[in-house]
Length: 203
Image (cartoon, rainbow, N blue to C red; front, top):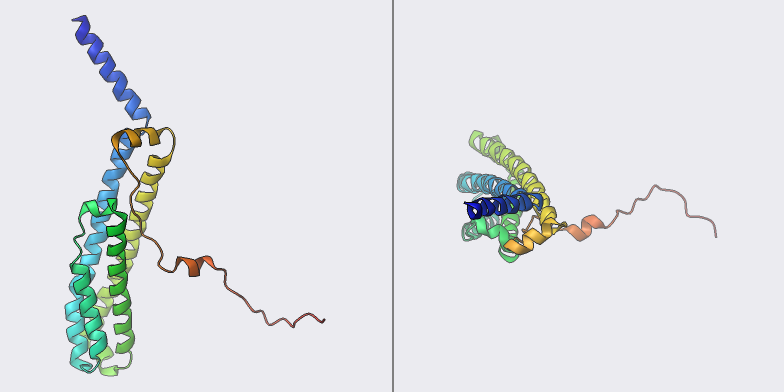
């Protein structure tokens, strides 16, 4: 009887210590990351589903814009080749590959919409306008979903790296997760040169 009571006491003490060292926090944050990641994938898939109809509509008015139509189709195929599983967020190299593929599709779609500006009849087409509006709305939702994912990963990574929860992370093998980055990070980090038109100082 005493042995059982002692066991329960030790068990409760261990649970209390785990709670105080960030274990439960990491579990909750990991679940949040999974949920936010699912939403990111959902919005990216929504965009990918719009591509075939968009390409076919543009092709109807601008069939000779073959290069850009091929680029969009290939970029979408490249995205589809990457298995975006929940485990992908634990593999920085795979995550970077995923982000690169999505960036490639974003660039191709942007070029396609620029090309469409040269075709007034295409711009006036109801189906194209509807697809364009859906694409713009989806891009906005992608931005929101990515931002929420970025914040969720930031919170989790902070917990994993801070003391004393970092000890719990090491004990259970929890590591920081990959996050979205800005592709032109160096360009953004460089302050712009502003010319206010002031005359050069006299020598």
